[in-house]
Length: 144
Ligand code: HEC
Image (cartoon, rainbow, N blue to C red):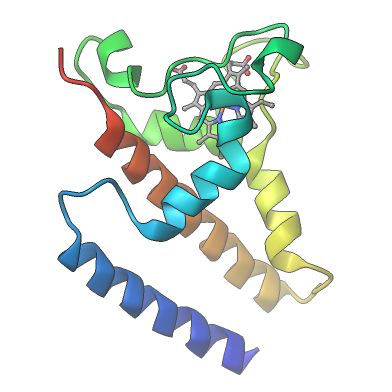
């Protein structure tokens, strides 16, 4: 546990450093990887929405480079974050086609660990990962 936490802090420090050196570029490397693995099947690798799985869905995965444009020039980080985690269910229950990433990532992070301390650490890590993905998405917004 202690080892996990210090490793975690260590990777946070690295991420912060990386963040400084690549600021202005398209998000952290980890967030880009997460996007490729978790999101690109539906939203496509370029986030424009027509991923390989899209044709199997009843709803078209939206173009994620135009979130800001659709909201008339405002990129609402909190709303995007809540949506990805599954905290914001805009439509009636059961109609969401996108996975609840908060639950999915928690399962992955916890990975058989059951203590409260580990669950809390896992929760923090999930929140951090999703916030990185949100920042990555923010960096992809088209301006027009
Ligand atoms: C199984 C396909 C699928 C996967 C995988 C997926 N999405 Fe989605 N996503 C959708 C669909 C479909 C919608 C439209 C709303 C709905 O689910 O009904 C959507 C909507 C969204 C929205 C709301 C956009 C808006 O303007 O309203 C965001 C943000 C988003 N996805 C981000 C992500 C991120 C980030 C990931 C990866 C962590 C991801 N999605 C993975 C299918 C998917």
